[in-house]
Amino acid sequence: MFDKILIANRGEVALRVMRAAKELGIATVAVYSTADKDAMHVRLADESVCIGPPPARDSYLNIPAIVAACEITGADAVHPGYGFLAENARFADILEEHEIAFIGPKAEHIRIMGDKIEAKRTAARLGIPSVPGSPGAIANEAEALSIAADIGYPVIVKAAAGGGGRGMKVADGPEDLADAIAAARIEARTAFGDDSVYLEKYLSKPRHIEIQVMGDGHGRAVHLGERDCSLQRRHQKIWEEGPSPALNAAQREEIGGLVARAVAELGYVGAGTVEFLYEDGKFYFIEMNTRVQVEHPVTEMITGIDIVNEQIKIAAGSPLSISQDDVRFLGAAIECRINAEHARTFIPSPGRIAYFHPPGGLGVRVDSSAYQGYVIPPFYDSLVGKLIVHGRTRTEAMMRLRRALDEFIIDGINTTLPLFRTLVRNADVQNGQYDIHWLEEFLKTDPAMEL
Ligand code: MV4
Image (tube, rainbow, N blue to C red; front, side):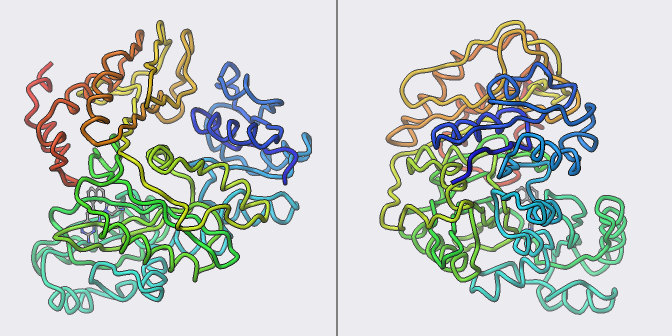
């Protein structure tokens, strides 16, 4: 087992990783930018190292500074959290060259899944269904027109280097295709420095359902069920829940089993999430995330499995401590991402938290690094904390969420708490009747939007 883990991250996820390390008897090192000298992750770590000025590229993305922090403190492993360097294959390679363990998958698998065309090809080879489309990158307009005619319109043009929705354009008919390709290429070149694009049939009203998996690289893998992340705005998830209101136990076992077998065959190491669009009872692979995700607590609440603890043990070479038969799904969990933003305009609201009172009680979990008097810096994401509730049924979880949201007090900054208080009372949300477009449509018609 490791002696000392350096956490190459900040905020709630840095605390999340430290909690798992501490329970395994492992010492922790925090790294921080000068903007984060008063941050809770610095205070709760055994040791801390300042790695640079506020901009992330000079601190949390500064690979030489992070490697130096490992050498200074004698850390033998790095947990990257999510975001920043979590899916940077070069970072994983550099750590290996320095004989520091990367708590995550093999660099090879990070690289494959970072290329969306390669990821789809790999999924297909492993028997995972995906959206009909071009077999690889589009060479020219003529090829695109021919493939689109085969699969039928509307089609979507996606950046091979994309993800998170950037570089995507929909074409409703052949007359739109050339413009869609040109626009997607420009966006892709600007955002990723790579203008390769591919084509897919456009699904008009899917849900976003993702399967949590863990592999140990010894040929074993399990699935931990699904999360429904359809409630999102501009590709930012705001509400995640499990199980999905759209699936039954037989469907869960079928897609979960398929994904777990594929991940085992791939020789995947650690935690991963296989993302699908789900429409008319069918699953279509879109991407795989090779990191622990923001919404992993939803799965932890319904399975009782500590995903970060398992990540650490697997990275240290242990086989998976759980078999598929050990995984039991109990009740329902919902996570709300509380952001430091206005609840209707989503304008960021950094600044001092004048008063902070998190909810508590049975089935309530708050993952946050905020505290009363803390000043949220303007340089990073706007997540203040995550409220996760668990209940024996989805109805119980919803009532608990309503109660916990009413109890949560954050003064001094704007937060998205009021939006969640509205959503938890909404009939469509209560009935689980939503797709990936529901929230943006709702926000257009919500009377509170006028405020
Ligand atoms: C799609 C799609 C419809 N059809 N692919 C957006 C992010 C990227 N990961 C994939 N995305 C989509 N791919 C096909 N063939 C619609 C989306 C999409 C979306 C997907 C998941 C969650 C939210 C979304 C919001 C808009 C569009």
